[in-house]
Image (cartoon, rainbow, N blue to C red; front, side, top):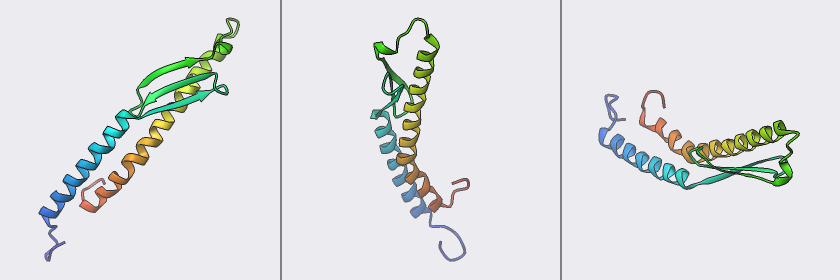
Length: 110
């Protein structure tokens, strides 16, 4: 800060632009990332994008039992949840350092 308690606006703008670039780069990496979740020892596999969009579901034929559809449904939900959790963790790893840097700008809420 400058004397008188006023922040250096040029420095703040420079920091904001740098963080904007870092956020854009992290978002691009997340958009390209694909994460996989499994359930039932690999009987069901779900793939999601880094943004959490479901891309595919793979079901091993051994998991298909017409007498027990509920178990397969549960495995699908568990695999999707597992993949979504991986996407959330990746987002935290990629965006966390950028969000942490916002505190240096003195912006409320960051």
